[in-house]
Length: 389
Image (cartoon, rainbow, N blue to C red):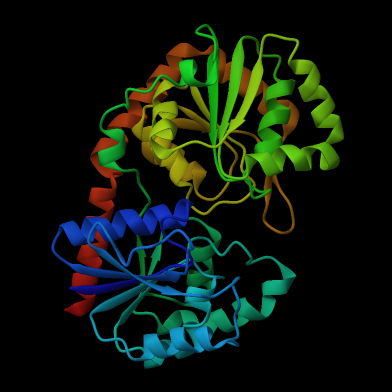
């Protein structure tokens, strides 16, 4: 098959959606299909093909809806002239999908949507967008959802969409089959007697960095390290001085106790090693669709404690590898931990080694059986084949 994947950003850009599309695309190439990714220009991308996946770049800034620049129109014309079998648009509310929406009926290929959550569904500035989406969504040949109970699939059901299929996220067998031989304790100066709480996520203001630090400091734990990996951590540290002075003050005095907090940016192999060598994946994120990091934790046999964000509840059930902390939701759909109860949950789960061991065994087993990217990619290939029939 000749397949196109349209996504806002792609490798070497880092993020959950980039990783999903890279894993699926490379697996499909391995299976003998021709895959081309349509994505944003990146200054460090000096190649037009990566691991067999062709890449076509468009120099488009931000996530506009109405085309203005010549490059915007070039992308639309490219879509209208495409020849092939299937094109999949990953994530709504971004330019690669936005520009295509009014033209879906004119695109000749089979068209698949993977909306990944509709993060702006409840926000006033996206009201007109989703009013029009009630009609556009019917122009796709299939709509793929990562969860059976979330705002995007419920939006489709409420608007009479019947072309629905559930395909979850996963984690890479290549990365997680064996633990990397990297000692993160030695590299980052983590004492051998410390338990490690791992958080992985780019600093966007919505991944729960502040909440994780606050819960950690409130939990009364001893001999623990909160180890946070992500992009823009230096920006978070600078921003914290001005936006969270009370938290920063408490953080400063924690240095004199038995705990420590490490914020760092590191390479992927070291991140994978951290999954294997930590004691708990701690993720009080405010907004997600289907967080890949929970599947990666399960793959490494790392128990997780997460807010009721995206389909984290489903992932906990599917993998048997984690617990959901007590959570509240605001009018915009963002979630936050109830700090007193969540702090106690954190303390209890970290003290209960037998429970964490059971989470570890269950998560690793579920990942091996159902949630490798190899298994997920096969489901997409079956979907594409069925559409062409």
